[in-house]
Length: 620
Image (cartoon, rainbow, N blue to C red; front, side):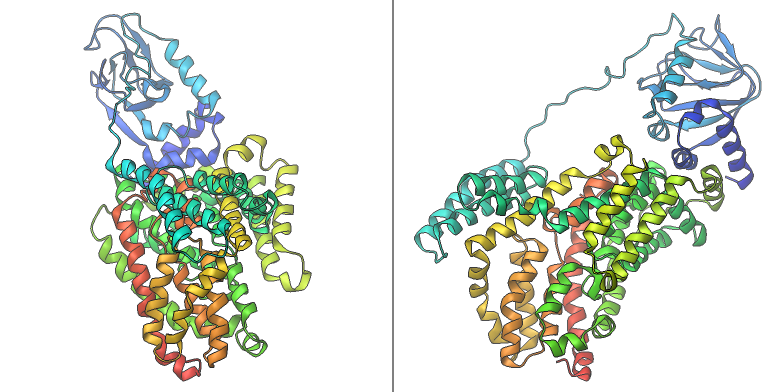
């Protein structure tokens, strides 16, 4: 499609009053899906009873609506407005035949493109009025509900097995630890039984992730394992309010169209192919890693880029490239979390465990330098693995002419977009200058959210619908579960059970890394990332100091390997990504899980390749 054609389509769309009810950002998202169709006199535009897959906007010429199934007989002749509104208002089939009475042109609007516009009531009402105004008596109107059938499905073996294990595993766990175990108290026995049931619900995907988390917290309170002020501490934590605030800022960035504008500018710079799209998402996430010190925050900011990119493609292409784009985005956000000191709050926990002389040495720059070889190897191996796992498939390409026309429709930067820009800059600057102003960043982020709400940039409806409340409940429940574990002494018990790792630390570093990684992989089935880091670091860093081993290296390996996951519940930011991106991201593709397993192996390879470099620095 030429640039001139796209400009013509943009002009016709912007000239039609009905589209004036739709935000410009949504009109820009529709543009890649539309095209101009030319018809000869007597040619059918659509036929009575055929599936209503497209609507049409008349550009020139005239059309006869109605008559018999061939378009002959009495009918209504139209030379402007919409045709085929059935596709936009939810009907299954066309209720009349439409035939061109002279050489004519229409803009074709596929149903998938109209879905983003018909959510606006004024636009939908305009199409309903257009349709009902020329309703043909002889045509049969089909309700959109007629073709929606309720299909009966048999529960899959996965769900049946999952629920059986959910009921049996805690019983077996309780019997074993109450009979043969050495847990510190009976509350710990009860808690580990509850955790086993929770993990089964997560692993088999029986319920949304936040429900098992709330189940664990609720059981702990009802059984007297921990008081409410400890079990519910996650909902009053800094992390909870940080996540809430950044999700609010992300909502403004998305709703205002700022994320879409930034995506279009990125697409305009590079080549129009899927390799550039994947690299753009990956490198943007990596760039944000040392700036935004929370993976959840980076995920909230970047995920709208992916959804907008997929919406710019046709359905077949989007389905083909979505798994790789999802892996590129998530990996860009998380792969280098251990490489930068400022990428996560738990990194500063490890930094705080180091002795003063090591803290003086491993400031931001030297931390990055010491970890740089691992980062470089991971970068290369990731792209090799991504190419091999996702080779083939559709060739995604969004023409530059389409991107140019989309930017033209967006027009100048709006006040809401400026609010998103200022909020994002303020958030980033608060991170970078934290040592100067000494105000905890979560409260600065909350102040930014308050400002956006106060000045109306984030409305009441968007605050309810655009913020991922299920993820916030998941995060609060997860933090609360960690607090309960500390309360009953389960973290100390795990530390003792890991004491055997210290025997390999100084004598056989190669085996130590392999065993530590395997132990962390198993622990991550039940423990969240930060809890895993704290449990392993609490024991292994003091052990490293005692035997004269470099404590930073131990902490770095723990940070690097703890970030790995396979199931969504294992990483709150990945669960958040799935929740925001929705089914379009195709995270259920088996290649996505395969890529996560490969990344775990890549991290091991990167550590081993870095050994000579660390020896040259005197770290190992």
